[in-house]
Image (tube, rainbow, N blue to C red; front, top):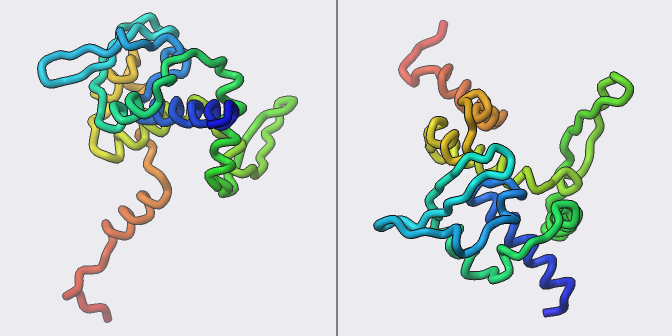
Amino acid sequence: MPQQENFMENVRGKFLFLIFNGMRFSDLQRMGDGNIVQMGEFRLLRYTQVKTKEVVTIALSDYAEEIIDRWPDLFNPMSEQAFNSKIKDVCKEAGIKELVNVTTYKGGQRVQEQKPKWQTVSSHVGRHTHGVLSIERGLHTRLLQDNFGHGSLSSTQVYTKVNDLERYKATLEAWKRPENEVTK
């Protein structure tokens, strides 16, 4: 595999690992085989977070195990700047082109513009995706808080925001007219 292709594939593997574990990129940079421990039937990932200095232990899912097996260079360091630049290329090649609204502030003024989604992807999107998907799959917010090493539940509640489609479906279901109801 040419060197550039191998680099891009490694970026992809790192991003998937962030999605399936929810760790920060700075923590992934410090990972090694020594961070993987066996406790009875569970293979765990144990590490000290760079940001909070908290020790976090999370179970390695089958998805995470597969990523470790498939990407032998997974734990090799890479700058976050290089990663964030290249993950955009990976997402663009994958066809992630949907337009999204991006809000920024310039000179105290709120500016909203539309950009292709691939331009907005960064390492933190992996952590955020993990949080949202964990909640959608039924993981209790308190358990996600522990997995993320958050000191307060309010930090974790960012991930509990329901997406619009789910909200629309739930609202319609709550207000669904009973089949036997007669209208006049």
